[in-house]
Image 1 (cartoon, rainbow over the protein chains, first blue to last red):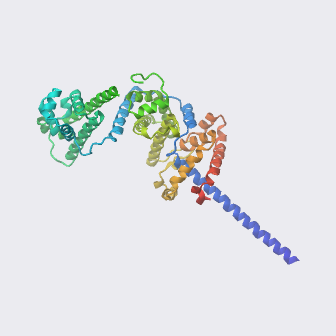
Image 2 (spheres, helix red, strand yellow; image 1 turned 180 degrees about the vertical axis):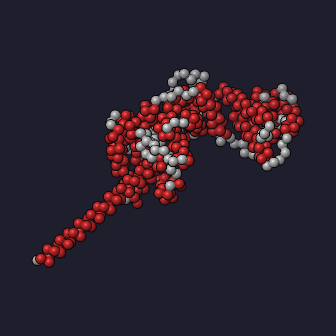
Image 3 (cartoon, rainbow over the protein chains, first blue to last red; image 1 turned 120 degrees about the vertical axis):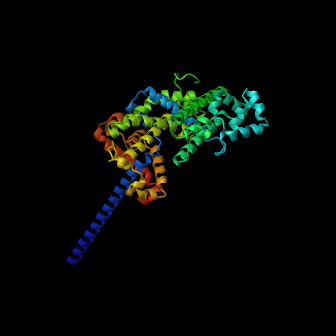
Length: 233
Length: 207
């Protein structure tokens, strides 16, 4: 009887210890789950869309801070650039086409001679030939004649602007890379020739002025193209 | 809307206009949300980095508007309002920015949750294992789905705490309780979220 009592006590102790271990293991699992969930929530923040209620809460908590005038201007320019880039993604022009190839392909598809097309637009034939050959920069032609040319060729205006921009950026990158490689790119060449590929020469006051001139031209071209597209809509 | 940016425009119309590339809609977006988003970004940066946040706030606002225009096609009205989407983009920009700052220097203590919790999985050995798991993104998706089913109050508490890292005092002010009770309320909200998650197959191996 005494043995049974002792065995029973030992059995109860063993069971008690086992239950304790199980409880501790369950508790540790719970804690581990909570910690992993907490980490997951912190990680999910980057991918989660806030609820409307949270957006309302933030609006109330943070209040409004007036956007300064210079920042406002910057934001307008940023949005315009972003819009261009968004539309550029939809453009079906091969990436390696420059402005000259784009114009020539469009014109030839319509079966119009360069001289005839130039005459219709009141341009000198050499201007159009120069654009197609990459010898004339578009800023030498001007915003309105250039967009008139694009319209005469039936080119979507924003696509056209993107091709001009792409060509200019490509030229700048090529010139900068040539300069970095130590290839000669003297300013005197820029004074005597007005080729596209000299637009982006990386140094010298003339090169900088020309880059700035091209940047302003691209902005003006884009603004006018957008306004024409808006009017068409 | 053309030419007139002073009339209030509904979010629905604004999103539709932005989608078709309406320039006047961009001006309306700036007028209706510029100050609110700037307020949010400045508030969050000032809380996190204490000073020197003005230039960063301007840059982040600029980046936010850039993303809004380039990603407007991804905005899905079925998933929430335009306002929530805009604040989400700004919030993501802030998190990226603070993460980069945390990498460069000693991680500053943010409100609610330490910035170390925002470290990239690749730089945090404890989370590297997690990142390698194929089901991590599935779990995050499950968390998002489960959060939608929570009460609005629980969702706001969790989102402000974990996604925005708002200070407990701010969360308390918003929901009208004492700041000391926020950790407990957050824990309860997390428990309710957990109850919804444990039943899901994505979390079976955590049990």
